[in-house]
Picture 1 (cartoon, rainbow, N blue to C red):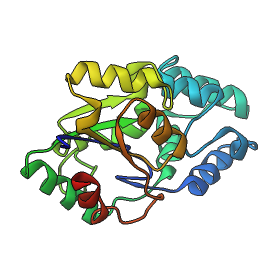
Picture 2: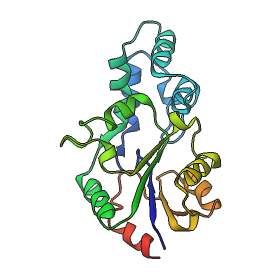
Picture 3: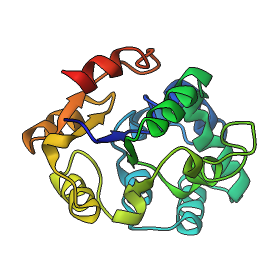
Picture 4: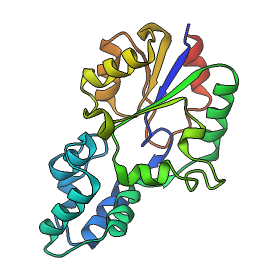
Length: 207
């Protein structure tokens, strides 16, 4: 029986807008942004930031070196938030219903301090609530120092929560991430980025 539901942020809770993020980084002067940015796992300084190997300030400085001029924190944040195309109200309503029915909700996401400066703020849902108001615990890659699909990321969450894989459903739009979780015995669901998963999730819970 499913007792715990683990959500990815980008592509599940929010609809990803990778093209807009690329456009914003290109506008800062990063000509090869389309090669450096990925919908699931970043590389270079982008991966270093999401893995927690560098902090937001070091990223800002290093990005400035790449583009040949200084960039501000706000410019970096604006570029990263290009990934956030939409936060559907139906998703938030579903999260609240799941918690009200007793499910433990967890976030497990490859993300970074710039994205989370928004998600952890009252700006998140536009109604004065942060993502913490919808989740019981958050597992962010830059804090855990590991990126999906590394199995260690899932192991850390399972051990910290003291939960069983068979009682846990993981929802992620990345096939590689879902495959890694499945190999550990976690139940999985892989909706497409931006699709409406709020009805199908009940079938997944009750399978």
